[in-house]
Image 1 (cartoon, rainbow over the protein chains, first blue to last red):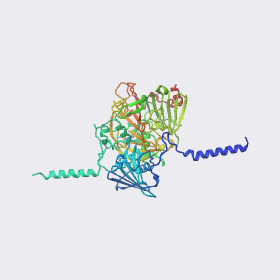
Image 2 (tube, one colour; image 1 turned 60 degrees about the vertical axis):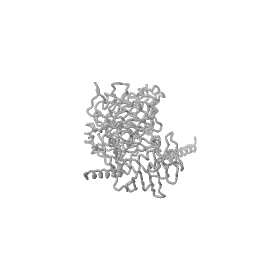
Image 3 (cartoon, each protein chain N blue to C red; image 1 turned 30 degrees about the vertical axis):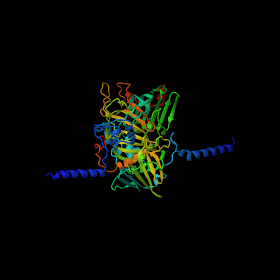
Image 4 (cartoon, chains in turn purple, green; image 1 turned 180 degrees about the horizontal axis):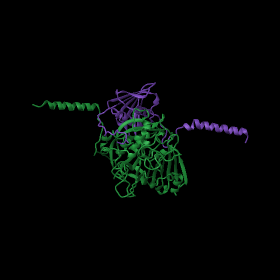
Amino acid sequence: MSWRQVLVLYAVLGLLGGEYWLIERRRVERPQGQPARERFLSLQPGQLREVRLRRGGRTVVSRRDADGWAVIEPAGTTIPADLIEAFATALTGAEEIARVGDAEADPQAFGLDERAAQVEIIAETGEPVQVTIGETNPTGTAVYARRSGNPVVVLIGRNVRYYEDLIFQALPSGRVPAADVDAPVGG
Amino acid sequence: MASPRWWLTLAGVASLSLAMLGTPVRADVVPGDKITEQNIEKLKDLISPGMEWVIKHGWPITITETKRIEFPQAYKEATEKYSGQVKLTADGLNLVNYVAGLPFPNVDPKDPQVAMKIMWNWGYTHLTTDDVDLRNFDADTGAVADHGPLTVERHFLLDHFRRLFWTGRLYVDPKPEKPNPNGYRAQQGLYPVLEPFDLKGVGALGNRYTSSEKQDDSWLYLPSLRRVRRLSTAQRSDALFGQDTDVDSYYGYSGHPAWMDFKFLGERDLISCYHAQHYPVKWHDKVDWAFDDVWEKRKVYVIEGISKLPQYAYGKRVIFVDKEAWVIPFSDIYDRSGELWKIWINDMSFRKKAFEGANVIDYPDEMGFIPAIVMVDMQLEHATKASLPSHRFPGEQGWYFNQGEKAGVTDDWFTVAALVNAGH
């Protein structure tokens, strides 16, 4: 083998190594059985400035600040910033599991009426985006949702609804607490 | 003439009702309540979506009073002695100066590292401090019927699940750490499979290191191929042996604390099965993939975990960690679309002995026996249930805690050679 051939082989090896390092290593493979799906919203969580959640006559408004997320409304309420971030990430990262209704769809059939949660997302740029989150589907794994400017009813992950529930559960209520077991060292 | 007090009382009740309308009173339960799909509203603030799914498919819930869970005395003393010196590195990925006990007994929700501290506490929980040997247990896997039984597709019988901890040891010499040139935190083995016949001799083995820079060593032995296959860390989330369960979901979460990005989602009340009355497990007569036991109301931390590994099977886990006991009652698992996928449910029973009887080990403290686990795949309507121990072995204690060599938990057992030999 000539020195020229050795050099060519090294060059090919270098190219393959570069391709692996720059492309293959960063490629995220989806587990089998999960085809690629359309994103529900074309927003990244980092772009969000404000999240307004309304459900059952109660409203929670959170605004991004230097430390993460601060609750603006109801004033004086403490909700973990991570929870707001997790909700925003779950909603902006949500994928369309299925399209289940068009503009003619009966909102009541999907819980997209007065029972629904209304979410308004305000990003750094662009118009605010409104999302309506309805009932869970019969299999209990996803929820019906609709976004402003698009009448299609889609299924998105149940995770969004659970985080929404956790946010509203973090608000003060008249609930009787469980037995106080705050002692840190095994009683 | 009627007393004006009557009107005052009426006005008071009306005012209270109006106030309650403005501030919704949450659902709640009391001991003795029996919850089914019909009255699940009473539980709606005390369960997760995964638990809601199983209850709506027939899982029965009986509420009992909340009981305290005490740390074992040695663990409590170690926590008091050593926790003050334990630090978390700035990136949250490694413990510094840990010796034994709970690393962070005083968790502050405002602490920027709160999620990692909770998960490190879970990683060093008191469930097993030195070693454990789980013997003679079985599992069934198959499709679940709505309000009906499991159609058994595969039945498994397993000989041993063993864990040996190299650090944080409290009972078996040498302690608190075995001479540890490899830097092990723990070793774990699940072998040999005895049934079904086509999987006879199959087993899994793994080493966990104290340093988060080192990934687990994991092996799977397949006698039919006469091959030992090495598994990556991400493959710990793959369902094993054709079941719904994966190694990373054992106990509710068994990955290294450093392998996920954890978020602290808050605190809440939740039902948990920590004082199961039945040992071995009692499966429900009709919905036989559900253990039929008592649940109590507990306070938990809610943690979201997203794997740092791109090949990881799950999109995220929502893990509930008990504020007092530092154990996980159940955890929900979502796929990458955020769709609810699976739930892992622990049937736990803190008690001093497995059951009354001669030669049954009587521990000085209540230990965390787990007479059953269930993992349900909601998308496939499929489940795996395990009886720990199996009903086929009357008198079997199942769980043997901190018995060291007496229970066969030796260094040699956690070698690939022993795994292969047991498979012959």
